[in-house]
Length: 125
Image (cartoon, rainbow, N blue to C red):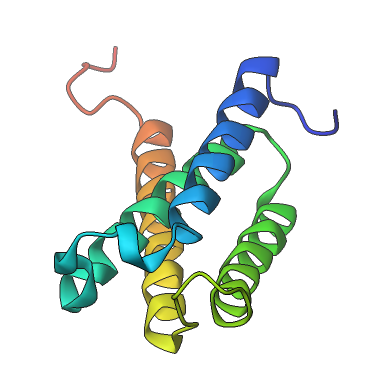
């Protein structure tokens, strides 16, 4: 497989993607009524935050990861609109998905910047 990640990172990324797609294409009749409100956006943010972290772990590089995530965002909303599962594509869901990606990227950026900082508590000789 391409990328610098371990076999485990690929298994996790593909597994999270399969579980995520299953949740996004679950028939509407079987979903909790709570998910018909604004709270529906919270799982979208969380799912795409986790998907972003999982795919970044594979070592594919940010460009390829963003292409995968964009395809998942667009594909899931188009699929929900077209498939007879009682769900509909929603721009607000796509925005929530994108927010999850952005939050993950900001978190990874902050974590990377902090890790690169010299240890401020050590004394220089």
